[in-house]
Length: 417
Image (cartoon, rainbow, N blue to C red; front, side, top):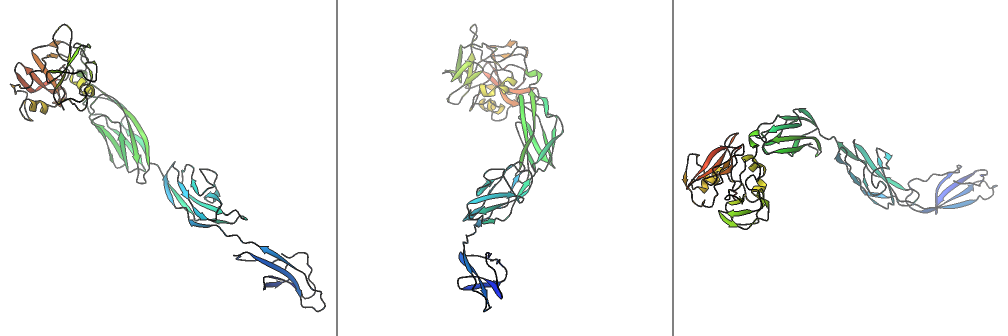
């Protein structure tokens, strides 16, 4: 823009740079376009009239700064609802950044004025870009748009059955069904043994025959094809031992619960276990394979061993037979008696290697002790039906390794490995 000069007759302004005249005009303003390099520009008044006095002139230097350039634009990405994403731009000759969401400058999230931006929590799809500036007269460049797609979370709702129910050991529970949306599958954790979940046609069903005892807290987690998960359904399943499994007086340690205990392997006394405060708490350290017995002395009679109902054997198996020991199966007893993997309750054989096995007798469901010092009864882990389990019976010099008894009786226990 030229100021302070007055055009005379047949006069005009000339704008130029160096020796080049860019234009001659009577207008006082000339607009430069596509300036790419720093240069000095001049303007002067010229006239073609011989009567006119010479015109004036002036110069102005124009400095051109390089625009910032973007070498890597932010990339489109996706996340699940309530998630965040990290967006990155790589630029040259840039000193400042301003991220935008749907064309509006953002001031939320983390580092929205740096090259790497972490969004705030997202609930809907949005478009992001970033303006990079070089700090010199606000020269800036805007990146390409990056679409951040937000996927819906899967959901789950109770359709039928109770999410808080009680079932008796060995009985089928009432099915629990959940309806799912935006989901491709469900998983569940925390169910009792014998109970599982199955997915079909957007319905997740929990069912089965519960074993064990206690209260089990479960969680159903929904998933979808976009990798989104959402834990929505929780509940409790309480498994009760059947009434027959709760003797009136028989509890852990009924027979001689004292600290005067003897520990034997295959009938031979061995060192006490690592922990042995009572007969029902024993942890053995190492040792050879064999049948281990805790002889609980009652201080007035012979050592009768320790009697348990079968349900107590199941409930406290980790204490009675510490890993790697386990409660023997019926086949273990059959093999131990030399009869192979299959034998029946009517089979009696001369027992070998059982000379040290105690004849602790048994306890009825009412807690009455019988046949002490004459018979020995040992539980197996093998079920016969809802009320009976296989056991090994010792009488004199013979053994019957597959007899059946009610689970409420109190028998001895030997562990194997």
